[in-house]
Length: 388
Ligand SMILES: *Cc1c(COP(=O)(O)O)cnc(C)c1O
Image (cartoon, protein in one colour):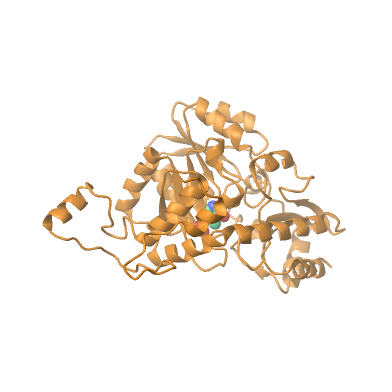
């Protein structure tokens, strides 16, 4: 049969129906599965059969969620995790040996940055960083021990765009494993494997759930690398709960519709802020003024849900702005139906040094807005009155 469209796969990828012929996938809240007899049990544990044994290894709800994301990303296999960070940690831990070296974009998610700087060095795994606008410095950072090239695009919280095709070509030339955290784009807007990524990581907590209910993470990619991630994860136990997997698989049914509206609202807010006298600068990937607008247009379907801008007057003005916000939430999540504003310099990225912060494009007055699904007029009105 002809390959179906994204929206159709998101809805129609479904586990086998049970004897009750349910229309919508039920929840399989079970920690383990039973065997017919001794031989069945032996063969199952010997992995001569592909079947569920224990929910730390696999569960029908997780498998449905994984299969959907694999189809969306064009991947062969995947593993679902209890959180995005469990996915990031387990993926790296499964692939790296003591002494190995990572090259990462400087502006990565705060906890990922902490993992690289505070924990991996304990196991003699070190990371070198490149700045967003200095992709040409990457090759100079490569050592005989370099194993992974890691990037996020759009970046958090600066919404900068990295040219995934360029990174993919570097990884290929030097035989590196290219891993992309695709959380800010969602698989609906961008599929990094088309540009040479070997593995794609998502925090399912963000746009995938989209309603701020559950934590989740997922890694998908080629069979060989995923086998290593699976072996590590099956033993160490970061698996996603079947309940959360069920929630996420349902959420993916509406991903395209939600993300379309997120992007439409975000672009309108960005255009409004661009004209605002109290705003120093606005960054949104699909604004013509964005420094990597052309790259964004090439690799993304739309600009995503996050808009970054800088309030005139630095920290003090920023503080006043947050205290004046009425409708929007002051919260750490993003990709939620509810619009959220955060101040990265004093919250998510406060543990970075000033130099690291500026390297990641985070200024003192910078506000990150995760534009939600409320009516755009109400979102703009709240931000406008807070700026006033
Ligand atoms: C939130 C986030 C993560 C971590 O995901 P959790 O589900 O919170 O553990 C990783 N990367 C990016 C880009 C994120 O936004």
